[in-house]
Amino acid sequence: MIDHSLVFDNASTNKINMNHIKTMLCGNFIGVDKLERLKLLQSDPLINEFAISIKEPETVSRFLGNFSHKTTQMLREINFNVFRKLLRKSKLKSITIDIDSSVVNVEGHQEGAVKGFNPKKPGNRCYNLQLAFCDELKADITGFVRSGNTYTANGAAEMIKKIVAQIKTDGLEILFCIDSGYF
Image (cartoon, rainbow, N blue to C red; front, side, top):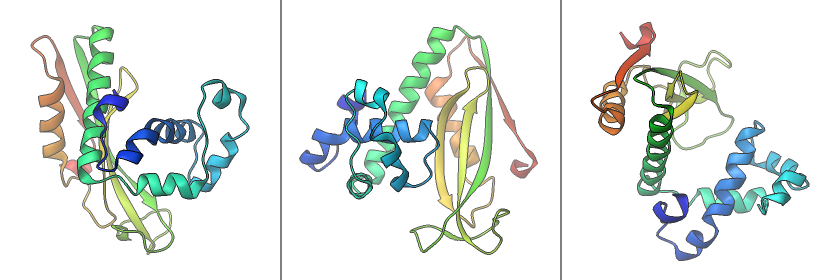
């Protein structure tokens, strides 16, 4: 799906996108929190077995710089498609979707990072993530990165509408689980 549905404006980026996305996914699996740590994957035999070429962090950073709102939306649609396939195969009649927010602390002056509620490092700049997961399938449905000073519930109604529009079928009951910050 990524090869066919994720199209960048830059033709040379399209040629390398799958390798870099596989690199990012592998980094996510091992808990990489900085691009520099992708180097830990360079000598991994499993990475070599799947023919993933781990590039220098600067190269991956340039690749990520090619993401626009349009390509991010494409990736979100791919994620919904994968989730729908998973949901169909599961044959579940009801699911629980947990929506929550989380704070990611940053050092420096990254775009969109501002001072907000940051329990880990009060006063530091941060991002506020809003995430939706299916409890039964232990699967990510969608998510957004927001400015650090964004209130927990901002955008939740729109997120719920989008999720329902993407996955609702006549035979599926959807229950949303949200905490008091969404009241």
